Image 1 (spheres, rainbow, N blue to C red):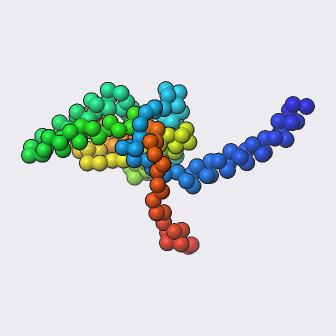
Image 2 (image 1 turned 180 degrees about the horizontal axis):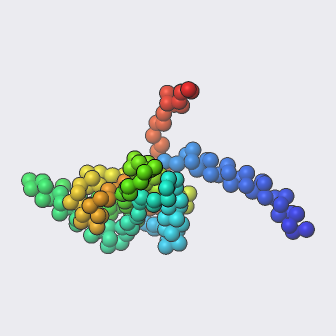
Image 3 (image 1 turned 30 degrees about the horizontal axis):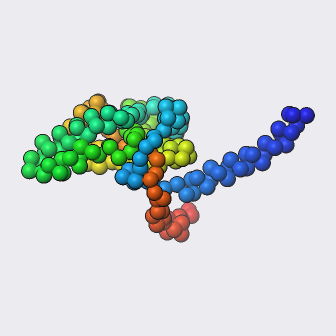
Amino acid sequence: MPISVWHARRPAEEDIAVRDAIELLKTRRSVKPREMAGPGPSPAELETILTIGARVPDHGKLTPWRFIIFEGDGRQRAGEVIARVFARKNPGAPAADVETERKRLMDAPLVIGIVSFTRPHPKVPAFEQELSAGASAMNIVTAATALGYGACWLTGWFAFDRDVLDGLGLKPDEKLAGFVHIGTPTKPSDDRPRPFLSEIVTRF
């Protein structure tokens, strides 16, 4: 009896889950890091987010990405790296500007850096591998949003500066696909204009 009842209810429950997933994807929007506060994800939630981040298309099973976690004092140490490089390359910059760079990762309680690298492969060009890293970043954003947090995928000059990347521990052949800032939204986030399908869709 319990088995038959479970089977009878399962389709309806799956329909609800599908509708919820579709609604999440249709309404997801970025939350500015300055509009985030604590708490951030728990250790169990972070593991879930990273697990989903690693579940992306990966032609050739090359795993051409990895993650760096910045939280607590780690955000400050990363900020020191960014500020030091900025000050060296901009010797005339006001102290306030250097301080702004120092706080780049301080708004959200958690920041995940998505590191992208490529491996030589006869069937998987580098571009495909880089796209896989981008898919990983988007999965992280979506997973964090599904858990009720605000999330924002950002780069900035320091994401492309070799000296900063070296200071953050990246290898010479590694790049940053970006930083995903994750935290609790402090205010409702307005959506931005989205493209009309009629402007971006054609049929062949």
